[in-house]
Image (cartoon, rainbow, N blue to C red; front, side, top):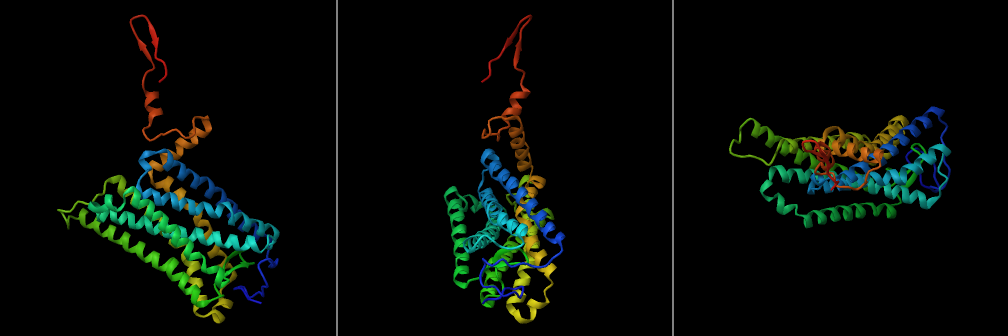
Length: 349
Protein backbone atom coordinates (compact mmCIF):
# COMPACT_ATOMS: atom_id res chain seq x y z
CA UNK A 1 0.00 0.00 0.00
CA UNK A 2 1.36 3.45 -0.85
CA UNK A 3 2.20 5.80 1.94
CA UNK A 4 1.33 9.45 1.81
CA UNK A 5 3.41 12.28 3.29
CA UNK A 6 1.79 12.07 6.68
CA UNK A 7 3.19 8.63 7.22
CA UNK A 8 -0.22 7.00 7.13
CA UNK A 9 -0.69 3.85 5.09
CA UNK A 10 -3.30 4.43 2.43
CA UNK A 11 -4.95 1.79 0.35
CA UNK A 12 -6.93 4.31 -1.66
CA UNK A 13 -8.47 7.75 -1.54
CA UNK A 14 -11.83 6.29 -0.67
CA UNK A 15 -10.59 5.32 2.80
CA UNK A 16 -11.87 7.66 5.50
CA UNK A 17 -8.56 8.56 7.11
CA UNK A 18 -8.92 10.70 10.20
CA UNK A 19 -6.58 12.50 12.55
CA UNK A 20 -7.08 13.12 16.24
CA UNK A 21 -7.06 16.91 16.47
CA UNK A 22 -8.53 19.58 18.72
CA UNK A 23 -11.93 20.73 17.40
CA UNK A 24 -10.71 24.28 16.84
CA UNK A 25 -8.33 23.14 14.08
CA UNK A 26 -11.10 21.85 11.82
CA UNK A 27 -13.27 24.88 12.69
CA UNK A 28 -10.49 27.28 11.74
CA UNK A 29 -9.80 25.54 8.44
CA UNK A 30 -13.53 25.48 7.67
CA UNK A 31 -13.83 29.24 8.29
CA UNK A 32 -10.83 29.93 6.04
CA UNK A 33 -12.33 27.76 3.28
CA UNK A 34 -15.81 29.29 3.53
CA UNK A 35 -14.38 32.81 3.36
CA UNK A 36 -12.16 31.82 0.43
CA UNK A 37 -15.02 30.21 -1.51
CA UNK A 38 -17.43 33.13 -1.03
CA UNK A 39 -14.91 35.87 -1.88
CA UNK A 40 -13.48 33.79 -4.74
CA UNK A 41 -16.91 33.33 -6.35
CA UNK A 42 -18.18 36.88 -5.88
CA UNK A 43 -14.87 38.61 -6.60
CA UNK A 44 -13.91 36.74 -9.75
CA UNK A 45 -17.43 36.95 -11.16
CA UNK A 46 -17.17 40.71 -10.65
CA UNK A 47 -13.87 40.72 -12.55
CA UNK A 48 -15.33 38.83 -15.51
CA UNK A 49 -18.49 40.98 -15.61
CA UNK A 50 -16.42 44.17 -15.33
CA UNK A 51 -14.37 43.31 -18.40
CA UNK A 52 -17.53 42.22 -20.25
CA UNK A 53 -19.43 45.43 -19.48
CA UNK A 54 -16.72 48.08 -19.75
CA UNK A 55 -15.05 48.78 -23.11
CA UNK A 56 -12.13 50.44 -21.36
CA UNK A 57 -11.28 47.11 -19.76
CA UNK A 58 -11.55 45.10 -22.98
CA UNK A 59 -7.91 44.93 -24.07
CA UNK A 60 -5.34 42.25 -24.80
CA UNK A 61 -3.83 42.42 -21.32
CA UNK A 62 -7.15 41.83 -19.58
CA UNK A 63 -7.78 38.71 -21.67
CA UNK A 64 -5.26 37.04 -19.37
CA UNK A 65 -6.88 38.67 -16.33
CA UNK A 66 -10.22 37.08 -17.26
CA UNK A 67 -8.52 33.71 -17.72
CA UNK A 68 -6.84 34.10 -14.35
CA UNK A 69 -10.27 34.76 -12.83
CA UNK A 70 -11.64 31.63 -14.51
CA UNK A 71 -8.74 29.59 -13.14
CA UNK A 72 -9.53 30.87 -9.63
CA UNK A 73 -13.24 30.15 -10.07
CA UNK A 74 -12.56 26.50 -10.90
CA UNK A 75 -11.45 25.64 -7.37
CA UNK A 76 -14.29 27.57 -5.71
CA UNK A 77 -16.93 25.74 -7.75
CA UNK A 78 -15.82 22.13 -7.18
CA UNK A 79 -12.63 21.19 -5.26
CA UNK A 80 -12.97 23.58 -2.29
CA UNK A 81 -16.57 22.60 -1.48
CA UNK A 82 -15.45 18.95 -1.49
CA UNK A 83 -12.57 19.78 0.85
CA UNK A 84 -15.04 21.61 3.09
CA UNK A 85 -17.25 18.50 3.15
CA UNK A 86 -14.22 16.45 4.13
CA UNK A 87 -13.50 18.87 6.99
CA UNK A 88 -17.07 18.54 8.30
CA UNK A 89 -16.96 14.72 8.10
CA UNK A 90 -13.38 14.48 9.38
CA UNK A 91 -12.45 12.32 6.41
CA UNK A 92 -13.04 11.69 2.72
CA UNK A 93 -16.33 9.89 2.04
CA UNK A 94 -17.00 10.99 -1.55
CA UNK A 95 -15.30 8.12 -3.37
CA UNK A 96 -12.34 7.65 -5.68
CA UNK A 97 -13.71 9.42 -8.78
CA UNK A 98 -14.49 12.65 -6.92
CA UNK A 99 -11.05 12.49 -5.31
CA UNK A 100 -9.26 12.23 -8.65
CA UNK A 101 -11.45 14.88 -10.30
CA UNK A 102 -10.99 17.23 -7.37
CA UNK A 103 -7.22 16.84 -7.46
CA UNK A 104 -7.18 17.28 -11.24
CA UNK A 105 -9.22 20.50 -11.17
CA UNK A 106 -7.16 21.87 -8.29
CA UNK A 107 -4.00 21.29 -10.31
CA UNK A 108 -5.63 22.75 -13.41
CA UNK A 109 -6.46 25.88 -11.45
CA UNK A 110 -3.04 26.50 -9.92
CA UNK A 111 -1.07 25.78 -13.10
CA UNK A 112 -3.54 27.79 -15.14
CA UNK A 113 -3.06 30.65 -12.67
CA UNK A 114 0.73 30.70 -12.86
CA UNK A 115 0.70 30.36 -16.65
CA UNK A 116 -1.75 33.26 -16.96
CA UNK A 117 0.29 35.37 -14.54
CA UNK A 118 3.28 34.63 -16.78
CA UNK A 119 1.21 35.66 -19.80
CA UNK A 120 0.27 38.93 -18.08
CA UNK A 121 3.92 39.68 -17.27
CA UNK A 122 5.04 39.03 -20.86
CA UNK A 123 2.16 41.19 -22.11
CA UNK A 124 3.17 44.09 -19.84
CA UNK A 125 6.81 43.67 -20.86
CA UNK A 126 5.94 43.89 -24.56
CA UNK A 127 3.54 46.79 -23.98
CA UNK A 128 6.08 48.93 -22.10
CA UNK A 129 9.49 47.80 -23.36
CA UNK A 130 8.57 46.96 -26.98
CA UNK A 131 5.65 49.27 -27.59
CA UNK A 132 6.26 49.59 -31.34
CA UNK A 133 5.71 45.86 -31.83
CA UNK A 134 2.92 45.49 -29.28
CA UNK A 135 -0.12 45.96 -31.54
CA UNK A 136 1.19 43.36 -33.96
CA UNK A 137 2.17 40.87 -31.24
CA UNK A 138 -1.12 41.25 -29.40
CA UNK A 139 -3.67 41.55 -32.14
CA UNK A 140 -7.10 40.11 -31.39
CA UNK A 141 -6.29 36.89 -33.25
CA UNK A 142 -2.91 36.45 -31.59
CA UNK A 143 -4.34 37.09 -28.12
CA UNK A 144 -6.91 34.33 -28.61
CA UNK A 145 -4.14 31.98 -29.76
CA UNK A 146 -2.09 32.79 -26.65
CA UNK A 147 -5.04 32.00 -24.39
CA UNK A 148 -5.71 28.69 -26.14
CA UNK A 149 -2.02 27.81 -25.89
CA UNK A 150 -1.99 28.53 -22.15
CA UNK A 151 -4.89 26.17 -21.47
CA UNK A 152 -3.45 23.45 -23.72
CA UNK A 153 -0.13 23.64 -21.84
CA UNK A 154 -2.01 23.63 -18.53
CA UNK A 155 -3.98 20.52 -19.46
CA UNK A 156 -0.86 18.73 -20.75
CA UNK A 157 0.95 19.58 -17.52
CA UNK A 158 -1.76 17.95 -15.40
CA UNK A 159 -2.32 14.71 -17.31
CA UNK A 160 0.90 12.95 -16.11
CA UNK A 161 -0.53 12.90 -12.56
CA UNK A 162 -2.89 10.09 -13.60
CA UNK A 163 -0.01 7.94 -14.84
CA UNK A 164 2.24 8.64 -11.84
CA UNK A 165 -0.61 8.10 -9.36
CA UNK A 166 0.21 11.31 -7.49
CA UNK A 167 -3.35 12.47 -6.82
CA UNK A 168 -4.13 11.14 -3.35
CA UNK A 169 -6.12 12.04 -0.27
CA UNK A 170 -4.12 13.66 2.52
CA UNK A 171 -5.87 13.60 5.89
CA UNK A 172 -3.82 16.51 7.25
CA UNK A 173 -5.36 18.98 4.81
CA UNK A 174 -8.65 17.13 4.14
CA UNK A 175 -7.85 17.30 0.41
CA UNK A 176 -7.26 15.09 -2.58
CA UNK A 177 -4.19 16.71 -4.00
CA UNK A 178 -0.70 16.22 -5.41
CA UNK A 179 1.29 13.81 -3.24
CA UNK A 180 4.88 15.03 -3.02
CA UNK A 181 6.42 11.70 -2.00
CA UNK A 182 5.11 9.41 -4.78
CA UNK A 183 7.94 10.22 -7.19
CA UNK A 184 10.92 12.42 -6.31
CA UNK A 185 11.80 12.99 -9.95
CA UNK A 186 8.27 13.98 -10.89
CA UNK A 187 7.94 16.29 -7.87
CA UNK A 188 11.17 18.10 -8.77
CA UNK A 189 9.96 18.46 -12.36
CA UNK A 190 6.60 19.84 -11.17
CA UNK A 191 8.21 22.40 -8.87
CA UNK A 192 10.66 23.50 -11.56
CA UNK A 193 8.37 23.71 -14.60
CA UNK A 194 5.17 24.76 -12.83
CA UNK A 195 6.61 27.23 -10.32
CA UNK A 196 10.31 28.12 -10.50
CA UNK A 197 10.55 28.58 -14.28
CA UNK A 198 7.39 30.73 -14.59
CA UNK A 199 8.44 32.77 -11.55
CA UNK A 200 11.83 33.36 -13.15
CA UNK A 201 10.24 34.54 -16.42
CA UNK A 202 7.83 36.86 -14.60
CA UNK A 203 10.64 38.26 -12.44
CA UNK A 204 12.73 38.99 -15.54
CA UNK A 205 9.82 40.79 -17.26
CA UNK A 206 8.95 42.97 -14.28
CA UNK A 207 12.62 43.67 -13.52
CA UNK A 208 13.15 44.92 -17.07
CA UNK A 209 10.07 47.13 -16.76
CA UNK A 210 11.25 48.60 -13.45
CA UNK A 211 14.74 49.27 -14.87
CA UNK A 212 13.30 51.02 -17.92
CA UNK A 213 10.92 53.15 -15.88
CA UNK A 214 13.71 54.20 -13.49
CA UNK A 215 16.04 55.01 -16.39
CA UNK A 216 13.43 57.19 -18.08
CA UNK A 217 12.51 59.01 -14.87
CA UNK A 218 16.18 59.68 -14.10
CA UNK A 219 16.68 60.70 -17.74
CA UNK A 220 19.32 58.05 -18.33
CA UNK A 221 17.51 57.50 -21.64
CA UNK A 222 16.08 60.97 -22.38
CA UNK A 223 15.33 60.16 -26.03
CA UNK A 224 13.37 57.01 -25.23
CA UNK A 225 9.77 57.42 -24.22
CA UNK A 226 8.10 54.13 -23.31
CA UNK A 227 4.39 53.62 -23.86
CA UNK A 228 3.60 54.30 -20.22
CA UNK A 229 0.86 56.67 -19.17
CA UNK A 230 -0.04 57.20 -15.50
CA UNK A 231 -2.95 54.73 -15.64
CA UNK A 232 -0.72 52.21 -17.44
CA UNK A 233 1.77 52.44 -14.61
CA UNK A 234 -0.99 51.85 -12.05
CA UNK A 235 -2.14 48.81 -14.02
CA UNK A 236 1.42 47.52 -14.03
CA UNK A 237 1.65 47.98 -10.25
CA UNK A 238 -1.64 46.09 -9.84
CA UNK A 239 -0.43 43.07 -11.79
CA UNK A 240 2.95 43.19 -10.05
CA UNK A 241 1.18 42.96 -6.67
CA UNK A 242 -0.89 40.02 -7.97
CA UNK A 243 2.33 38.24 -8.92
CA UNK A 244 4.04 38.96 -5.59
CA UNK A 245 1.06 37.66 -3.60
CA UNK A 246 0.89 34.50 -5.71
CA UNK A 247 4.61 33.86 -5.18
CA UNK A 248 4.36 34.48 -1.42
CA UNK A 249 1.30 32.24 -1.01
CA UNK A 250 2.64 29.33 -3.08
CA UNK A 251 6.37 29.46 -2.31
CA UNK A 252 6.23 27.65 1.10
CA UNK A 253 4.34 24.66 -0.34
CA UNK A 254 6.68 24.39 -3.33
CA UNK A 255 9.79 24.61 -1.19
CA UNK A 256 8.41 21.90 1.09
CA UNK A 257 7.72 19.75 -1.96
CA UNK A 258 11.24 20.29 -3.25
CA UNK A 259 12.75 19.36 0.11
CA UNK A 260 10.60 16.22 0.32
CA UNK A 261 11.60 15.21 -3.20
CA UNK A 262 15.32 15.62 -2.51
CA UNK A 263 15.31 13.55 0.68
CA UNK A 264 11.89 12.05 1.45
CA UNK A 265 13.01 9.67 4.22
CA UNK A 266 14.72 12.40 6.21
CA UNK A 267 12.50 15.40 5.50
CA UNK A 268 8.95 14.03 5.76
CA UNK A 269 9.16 13.22 9.47
CA UNK A 270 10.75 16.60 10.26
CA UNK A 271 8.09 18.81 8.67
CA UNK A 272 5.74 20.07 11.41
CA UNK A 273 2.12 19.34 10.65
CA UNK A 274 1.12 22.97 11.33
CA UNK A 275 3.66 24.18 8.74
CA UNK A 276 2.42 21.74 6.08
CA UNK A 277 -1.24 22.56 6.69
CA UNK A 278 -0.60 26.31 6.82
CA UNK A 279 1.32 26.23 3.54
CA UNK A 280 -1.56 24.46 1.81
CA UNK A 281 -4.32 26.71 3.11
CA UNK A 282 -2.27 29.82 2.41
CA UNK A 283 -2.03 28.59 -1.19
CA UNK A 284 -5.79 27.92 -1.21
CA UNK A 285 -6.45 31.42 0.13
CA UNK A 286 -4.62 33.03 -2.80
CA UNK A 287 -7.50 32.25 -5.17
CA UNK A 288 -9.67 34.94 -3.58
CA UNK A 289 -7.06 37.73 -3.45
CA UNK A 290 -6.78 38.87 -7.06
CA UNK A 291 -10.26 40.37 -7.34
CA UNK A 292 -9.65 42.30 -4.11
CA UNK A 293 -6.35 43.66 -5.46
CA UNK A 294 -8.01 44.84 -8.67
CA UNK A 295 -10.65 46.68 -6.68
CA UNK A 296 -8.12 48.33 -4.38
CA UNK A 297 -5.48 49.35 -6.94
CA UNK A 298 -7.24 49.64 -10.31
CA UNK A 299 -9.61 52.57 -10.67
CA UNK A 300 -11.46 51.18 -13.70
CA UNK A 301 -12.21 47.88 -11.96
CA UNK A 302 -13.21 49.69 -8.77
CA UNK A 303 -15.67 51.89 -10.63
CA UNK A 304 -17.12 48.94 -12.50
CA UNK A 305 -17.49 46.92 -9.28
CA UNK A 306 -19.57 49.78 -7.86
CA UNK A 307 -21.69 50.01 -11.01
CA UNK A 308 -22.40 46.27 -11.04
CA UNK A 309 -23.31 46.22 -7.35
CA UNK A 310 -25.47 49.32 -7.81
CA UNK A 311 -27.13 47.67 -10.80
CA UNK A 312 -27.94 44.57 -8.77
CA UNK A 313 -29.28 46.60 -5.86
CA UNK A 314 -31.45 48.86 -8.02
CA UNK A 315 -32.56 46.07 -10.41
CA UNK A 316 -31.47 47.85 -13.56
CA UNK A 317 -30.63 46.14 -16.85
CA UNK A 318 -27.81 43.85 -15.77
CA UNK A 319 -25.74 43.70 -18.94
CA UNK A 320 -25.96 47.28 -20.14
CA UNK A 321 -22.68 48.79 -21.40
CA UNK A 322 -21.39 51.24 -18.80
CA UNK A 323 -18.06 52.11 -20.39
CA UNK A 324 -19.17 55.57 -21.46
CA UNK A 325 -20.72 56.51 -18.13
CA UNK A 326 -23.97 57.08 -20.01
CA UNK A 327 -26.28 56.87 -16.98
CA UNK A 328 -24.26 59.50 -15.14
CA UNK A 329 -24.24 61.84 -18.13
CA UNK A 330 -28.00 61.48 -18.65
CA UNK A 331 -28.63 62.24 -15.00
CA UNK A 332 -26.45 65.33 -15.18
CA UNK A 333 -28.48 66.86 -18.07
CA UNK A 334 -31.67 68.75 -17.22
CA UNK A 335 -34.64 66.82 -18.46
CA UNK A 336 -37.07 69.71 -18.86
CA UNK A 337 -36.83 72.61 -21.33
CA UNK A 338 -37.97 75.86 -19.80
CA UNK A 339 -39.69 78.55 -21.85
CA UNK A 340 -41.01 81.84 -20.54
CA UNK A 341 -44.03 80.44 -18.73
CA UNK A 342 -44.22 76.87 -20.01
CA UNK A 343 -42.56 73.62 -19.00
CA UNK A 344 -42.01 71.22 -21.88
CA UNK A 345 -40.86 67.73 -20.83
CA UNK A 346 -38.41 65.85 -22.95
CA UNK A 347 -39.25 62.22 -23.70
CA UNK A 348 -36.71 59.65 -22.71
CA UNK A 349 -34.41 58.50 -25.51
